[in-house]
Image (cartoon, rainbow, N blue to C red; front, side, top):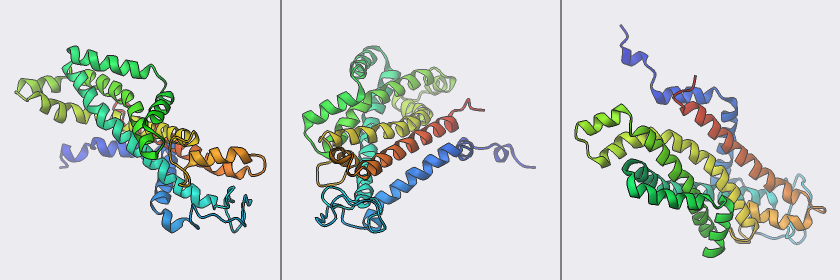
Length: 286
């Protein structure tokens, strides 16, 4: 006879099955995978050096030789879009990692300990949330100085309050459950309750928030690069490419079309994937 343990589906397999049944999430995952692969394999798939100028091919329209056309310095736009994916995805991943590294322990501490610690952390979080995310990122990037590294730090700090608020709320809901009371009753120390019992139960919500935050971070990096506060020329970045393209929008619209389309597709893909993960990881989903 088949045992009950063999017939009960694990939560991970159930979530994966739900995710695979969502075409929109699978489309988003495919687009994200495509851009990640292009960024990682950029030296092998890019047809030309992204910073090499060719004064004989200035603002050439898309053709068999230049699939995406060229820019005002004769640089191949396809190569620059591919290499620009590196800057955008790197900025998204590292800035979100900074937000999680800072926001997760602070939110867990505020929600689990409570008292004056919760009050101090919550008031600082509320003050940061009162300032729009992008405005705060621009202010921090201008203070730190124009570079991709400083842009990632600025975006990461600006996105931290959302992770603090989410972690604190999930901890407040979870710490009153019966399994937490049982863990206290058998004498588990507080650090073990937080790390072993609370943290795994709030990770699904953090995964969804991280996926959606990646999309916001990519837009923020493009915005900072557009303003000259992110990736510095001649290194390729989608935002700086759009900044250059605005001077030639009527003569060479392809200079804005392709980096703009890349930003749109990546942000859409991460949002679709985040929505799919939210539905798949929700234990109340039917």
